[in-house]
Image 1 (cartoon, each protein chain N blue to C red):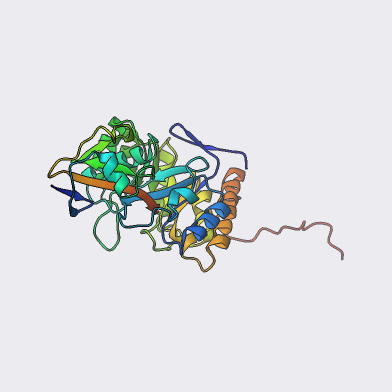
Image 2 (image 1 turned 90 degrees about the vertical axis):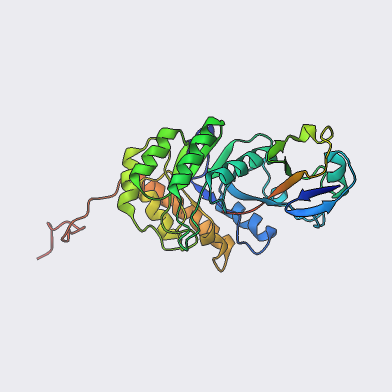
Length: 259
Length: 65
């Protein structure tokens, strides 16, 4: 497909955005990301292991910032202050690159977004000239507020992070799509290809996923499946599906039958 | 003198930030450095002199979703 999605100042070629966590090793990470066709790739920021062999390959050696649009996340941050601090470190790490994925998650077993802290962090980051793609709940009011603050993409969850349950509330996602002008990207909860297709058929601009690919038995094959699923779902959305009917409607003409 | 680096207390000689990073084989690696809560741009690594009680955070990119 030649269409692109515009996220802030970035024109993205792929509607599939992928994470780099949970892979067996960097080699598998690189091969899966390649197969996914994604150009936006998320990464985390963590303390450097001071004792490590300096020749050990680094994520950025496999996922080159020259080839991919890196999207540093604020995973693990539970407060707005921590998230803002992480984004500033990420911007320095990536030589001034200002596109970030803001996520401030609760300490509960749902890892549900803490929307109060998320809103606070989003305000600070937008003022500090970051382009903020924001992970949030599927609450339509919060999504609208995040757009008003100036986030460049709003990314409601389909289901809890890493759960693989698929879209649990398509009606809310649909409502968010109706209300927002910035791209709506489902982030988290996708388990398999059909889940990604459902999100795209609803009209989402894209889907961000990590575990569904990384924890598949064959991540490289699943990455390709997801690429096709996203493309399929988008095409079906653009094509416009037929209306649902309660009863059958024969496909073959009912006239001209032999007697 | 003592400095805190990524949460660990270290005994080091007074030196510039770039010589400290060099001693850890980190100079030229893809890292970002925060000193006492403030980002230190790479261009300033050589002009920053570490002093007793400094708190350093040194971070890199790793896999994440």
